[in-house]
Structures are given as C-alpha cells and as structure tokens.
Length: 241
Image (cartoon, rainbow, N blue to C red; front, side, top):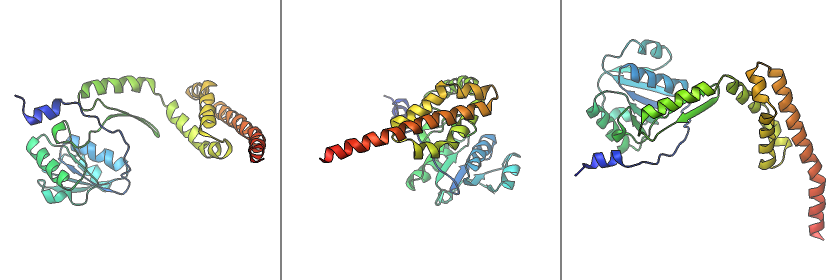
C-alpha cells in the first residue's frame, strides 16, 4: 500500500495562482549554492529584504551582499523563521528541507522547497517577463519539464513590443477610467486599439503611430460616453414621472 507521502505527492493539488507584494518584507532563503543565490536574487528584484542561511556560500553571494542580502554562514536553525513573510529552502538535503518546512508551517509562513513538493505550501511557476508584463506557467508541480517547454514557446512569441504595449496602455489607463463609462465600453476600447494595429506598430518600431491609434480610440470611446449621457439623463427623468 502506498505511503501517505506518496499518496499526497500523486494526488492532484489545485493551487491558487497569485502575485505577492514583497516590497520591504523579510524573506529567508536556506541554502548556499547557485540555486539559493538565484532565489535570493529574484526576491531582491521584487524589493524583499533577504536573509540567507547556509554553509560555505558560493561566490555569487558576494554581489548579493552588496545589494543588501544578509548572509549567515552556518546551518539552519528553527528560530531563523522568525517573522519572515516567505521562506525558500534551496538545499539538496531533504532532511534540511523538511526541517525548514516544519518550522515555517508551525509559524504559518508560506514555504517552498525547491524540487521537493512534499515540503512545499506553495510552488513557484516558470516565468516569462517582458518589462512590466509577467506570464507565469505552472503544471501544479506535476511536470517542471513541461512548464519549461511551454515557457520556451511563450518566450518565442512574446517580443519586446509587449513591454512597450503595457507601458503605452498603462499611460492611458487613468484617462480611460475618467472619460469612458462602464467596464464593457472600456474593454471594447482597449480591444479596438489592438484590432487597429497598435501591437504591429510597436513591433515595427513606430511608437508615435501606436500612440496616435491609442489616443484616437480613446477619444472615440469618450465621445460615445459623452453622447450617451443626455439619453441616460432623459430616461432617468422619464422614470421619475
């Protein structure tokens, strides 16, 4: 009969996808190798305050220390979990991973053990990033190889024009919200921009043309909202009679 651990590993788990704000929050990485350094760097890039605990850290940690990582060259202690917002165990020792996971769970702290799903309360997706655009890919821990394959395929499709698209549309989001009434109308205006070639303009390096298309579609949507206001007002007045 399969063990409880085997049953848990084989049973499908429905993970809730989310993006977590770690700006200024304390995070712990346990491990001293290249994987731990990579995890510490990704947390730093998100603005976290990172502490790393591990024996004989690799050279990559020198630059991370200069960026503010607190490095403790020693073995993990249960007391290290402290008031951490998030913990990553990046060791190749399952006993250490288990100890880190147990200490984190006792304190109610989210914990991930790299390539050790039994000791995870959350998993980290494969990620494709283009500027402020982030696409996360997960197989629920079932097949990291499949996640990598999908990541490679998406990376081939998403060029730098998508980063420019996010910047351009983001710059007009405030005016869209102020000038265009109702989510359906706003969604239609955003879609119209794409349908009328904004992305193609950006891909071809024509940022001015893309910006003109965005402004024109926004103006048209705003005019539609303005024209609809008198009709709505008349309908509301009629309902009062």
